[in-house]
Image 1 (spheres, rainbow, N blue to C red):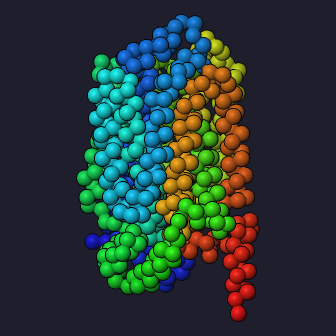
Image 2 (cartoon, helix red, strand yellow; image 1 turned 60 degrees about the horizontal axis):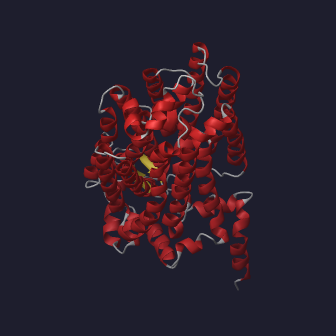
Image 3 (cartoon, rainbow, N blue to C red; image 1 turned 45 degrees about the vertical axis):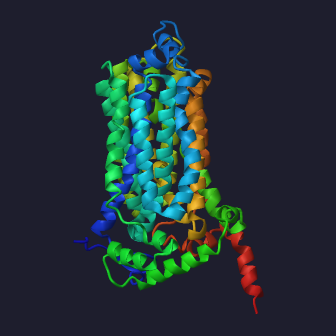
Length: 506
């Protein structure tokens, strides 16, 4: 039985009625397991790269540096090949997301999600069975293909099936499961750290969410928008009635058909993204992805155990600290699930920018004052830094983390939606790759100043959210241009030519 909760696909209660059906909730949760795959991989890599058995087998020079008594605290993990182990996944994700965007448009969101689970499973098998560095990196590249396909399809899928009133909360399920994946990875790392095959168990554990997504994707429906877009209007109407829980869906159906017809007139969506009327969405989605990475969050999530070891925690303690931050990350994301459609996107982004800035600056100050090249950070300051990192992570988890994916998935019109979201996903993966590949080297050279580097970016992020980001909560994804961008003080200028053309018509 569908849940008896009315949603509104527009502004008024009479406009496009729909129920928040069990079908929508179940499909959203299953699809969001693509986020669990992504999150598990983010969390697992940092823990594995701190395991002595793993380092001794694949990165022996790092193992020697790690245990060298007088090795610089900030430089003991500075190794380009070690960083490539983490970052190669995101390079592959950039390339694969281009193919995923075309797959989404031509074959649908559902099959793209299924391909994501296939690539991920093959990558997991290669990683868990790796006997040399080449096999390890190839496995990471296939994992990257899975991440590229999953991150391209899942947010679009959820945005297109969700009633507008609940679109934000349901889409945040993707980021929620990213955080659950990170937490699960940290827990697995903690219990496998001292096992002779612990790294194989940790890497192989990624198969669990991939298998769930593979089998679960057989049960989900295709989105009505995708069905109509690919020439199946009857199935699209039937699916729309099924996911809305009401028979009277004609108005929403007509809107989708009209939007689809307009989209078909666009033969080159990537070229269309360069038009002035596409600038607001393209700039906003790209900037949000860059900002998401320059918060410094993936520094914490990729390298949490390594970072805590740098600050003087022992191996087990550093992994346990990563579990603590992972738990905070998951719990704080629940705030976004329940508040994003009430408080709005802008409020959460601006509040979190202030919170994260304070945490980063104080953390940087403590490390600059008390963590030198070869000493251990005094215990009381170590725990204070752990607390501050939790404050930072919680702010990110209810704002820039989930909303960095939600907002780009809901702001593009259908004619440029898959192409535009590809650009957003690619931007995210490119800058994730840059941060992952450069961080340990940056830490070695910048030392505690790296926290001030990221805090500077957070100031810019907060200003952008306050001045240039319009509110999108409760607005139909097919009405974003008319109700959001054309009314914004800056972005409305990108549509001046449309008003001029309308005025010149006889």
